[in-house]
Amino acid sequence: MPAIASRKSYRVGRSKTGLGLFATMPIKKGTRIIRYFGPILDCRIPEHDEIENKYLFELNGRWTIDGSVRKNLARYINHSCRPNAESDVRPRERKVFIRAIKNIEPGDEINYDYGSDYFKAYLKPIGCKCPSCENKRKKQRAEARAERAKVKARAERKAQKAGAKSLKKSTKKKKLNGHAVAKKSRARA
Ligand SMILES: [Zn+2]
Image (cartoon, rainbow, N blue to C red; front, side):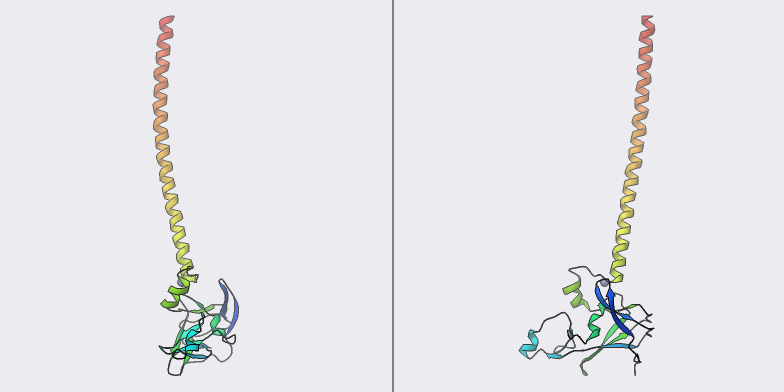
């Protein structure tokens, strides 16, 4: 039997992307945190098959949980590409539980991987905002910044070298001119 958190170990709170579910106490790896629930839809019933919202959780080819009901607090759990929880799908029981796959600390946001279909349909077009993807983007921006700085420094060095060269040339010229002038004036004297 998997461990079940005895008291409510979560609360809905503000996350970066809106609302999210946060741990209110330490949650041990392997613990069932919350059940993802709602009316069970049967795709063979046309009225059911027509229902469309982003809280649909497909159990298998036939059964889907409509998680859009307000009481289903698990619907507040955001997606992450490097999550601390997972969905434990039990098609035969028509149940889904969200289970910790890491030790979760109080205050941590709880998240699980929504899967590639959801990612492609909803997250990829707007850019995934999960911490892992945000960090990746931050790193890429820093690398781009460093690259630009490198290019700029190289260009500056080049310009400096070119400047020094032309300065050398112009002083040489001046000397020559001075010499010429001096010669002429001497000749005139
Ligand atoms: Zn992501």
